Amino acid sequence: MSKKLVVVVRPQSLESDWVSKEVEECLAARRVPIAIDVNRTLENADDKSPVKSRLQDKLFLSETIEDLDANPSDTIISELIRSFRSTRQDTLRLRAVSIAAIVFAMVAAIAVWQYILAERQRKIGYSRELIIIGISQTQT
Image (cartoon, rainbow, N blue to C red; front, side):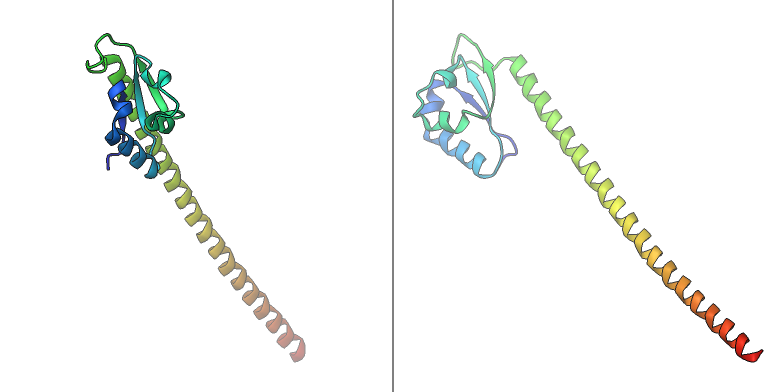
C-alpha cells in the first residue's frame, strides 16, 4: 500500500466502487487520505455517498477548474509536495527526539548504576573503618 492516498474528487470518483475501496483501505491502515475537491464536488455531494462519508473530516484541497477531466493545477500539486515534505520533516524531528530520549534514559540508567556501586563501596569502606577502630580499641 502507498504511504499517501490522494483522491481527486470528481463526480465519477464519488460513484466509483474502486475509489471507495481505496479510501476504506487507506483508513483501515490508519493513514489519512488527502482529497482534491474539484469544483466543490465533495462539498456538494449527497451525504449518503460512501466516499463523502469517509472523506468528510479528512484533509482536502479545493480546486476550481473548467474541465472536470483536466489535471490538478500546478498550485495544488506544489501544495501537496509541500505538505509531504512537512510530514517528512515532522517524522525526522520525532525520530531525533526519540533517539535523544533513549540516549538520555541510558545515561540516567548508567548514572544510577554508578551511584549504587559508589554507595556500596562507601558502606564497605565505612565497615572496614569501624573494624579497624574496633581492633585498635581492643588492643589498647
